Amino acid sequence: MDIQKIRSFLPHRYPFLLVDRVLEVSDDRVVGYKNVTINEPFFMGHFPEEPVMPGVLVLESMGQVAAMMIASKPEAKGLAMYLTGIEKAKLRRPVVPGDQLVTEAKLVKLRGKVGKVEAVAKVEGEVVAEAMFSFVVAERLTGEKD
Image 1 (cartoon, rainbow, N blue to C red):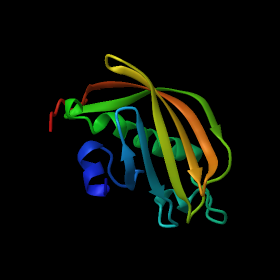
Image 2: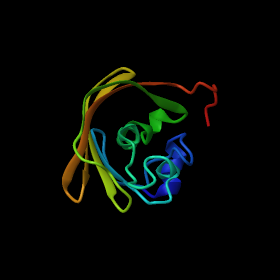
Image 3: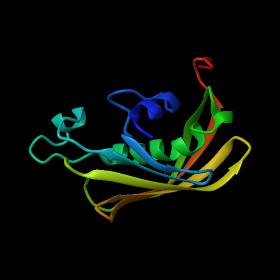
Image 4: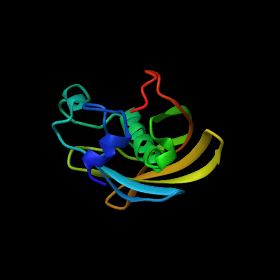
């Protein structure tokens, strides 16, 4: 999926859309990536002399990739995935400009509108972050249905 297709499923927009492409998506697995460039607005202050992607944004990117697993289903049209928890988060090494942050997420459970996914992010095959995300699928806060 290219960025236009991703934008049709996720409500995030610049500078907070942190997925550039989805490579694979199925009912229980998704793989996507974020190309990290020096032009990211957060690098102006984190840290100007040694740019490092903030860990919370690495986790956000992972969560957005994971959300594509649910958001791309026809029955999810007009709904949103809201993060309800993060467990077992580990940041293994810094993510820097020039890195391609590749996230693989697997559905652990989905009961009704509540679920859990396990996600691992890698750069050049090396694990840089991992976490378990809990979420709820719900009406958008704006009440809009698309």
